[in-house]
Image (cartoon, rainbow, N blue to C red; front, top):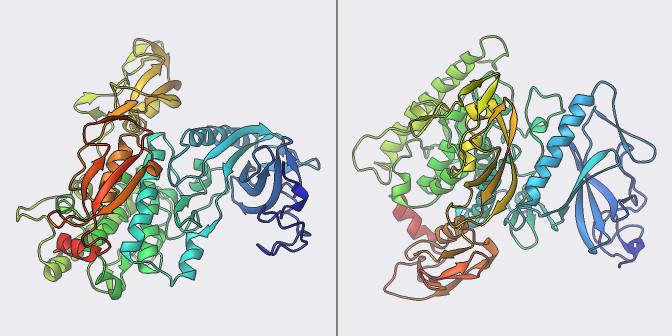
Length: 568
């Protein structure tokens, strides 16, 4: 066990007990804010508290030392601003009159971090190693990764990245957020401030908070990220709540910042004057499918936006068949501006729906302008066969929650305020939690996951109470999710790009870190595509097995040729 007196309380590295750390520059005489736990405090006789490096309306994060495993950790403490008070012994008490806000928040905090603890091994997350209550509040302990924020990384490296550099960084991140969505977690704060670039060059997502910390009209001090937060987070009177598409907006806005060197115009300004500036030097070099993907994902109104991470990932894949339905394009002009409907920002009043209508009209104007410019500059979009097509996301409202495959899902009322429990077995969990009717009558909690040969990964295999029971409104339904089969057949991935093949394997349950790419050369095969898989196609293996993708090295790294062919 390490002598903790030698640790720097700013970075938790062994610096020999220096007064000013030669590694990070932290002064050992520094103290945390009086509202926070002080440095050198021991938590549960295991975790040493160091510098408090981040705080928001939900709580505070400290760098710490796990004396049991001798590792650096992050310690997140639930400490809602305005509702919590620090006592002299370090414990937390509730400010009088804020009991409901504090207690509701702590329950949400524990539930969120327990869900995160079940996502151990997801590539772009910091593993949660401990969740517990102490000191009158709650704590979540995660692994610590040495690195800097994406914002700082971009500042140090010229302000932006090329698409060829950004794509391999963001695909694991997109896959990670999709995995979070499968278990009912929405981030609501994806931005360059909440993404860490590790020393290994990989991106990790941080800053995951409970819902009230990132939504207006809550009882908690909120934290929004101008340019990256979606309109539904600002409290405008629109019909759509936050959902998967909220994270799509944040992810797309972050990718926009990475590629363009600046954040998109904040949605609070765009809702009354929807303009999007694309510097010509970037618009001329980015593939059309990337511009189209960003245009779709950055739509103001949620119903017009790319709806989930899977659709966003597909839209970033240079396959002509995937771009055929994309109708919104950024042009290669420097500025694209719609005619503003008003010179002032909308005010919250009883006519809130008016602003949704105005924003939709602005969006429609932008689409028409972009489509005309794109047509005359580019010709027909990739995959256009000459047959007019419509984009359902821009012309129709979201799919009603009242039906699912023609089946009315509003649970029948049995009488005496009892409702029939729906049969959830065999249904995809992410579809269930998004249904408004279901959420009106029941709450859902994932209590376990297990392998299943019958149901794919992410589908429900058990529920309590069962569908033959009648319960009161608001009853919690506990769910067991499928991890997919324990053993699966290696799929035919020949002809796919390495990223496409990796994603297909991850959807089957394989670990990202267990998928390796080996470059080989075959002049007769398409460049930069998979030409063989090991173990062989059809072989049944455990999902924790190592998979090797053999990718044709002909023109590997020269992605410009494949991108240009996909965008012509």
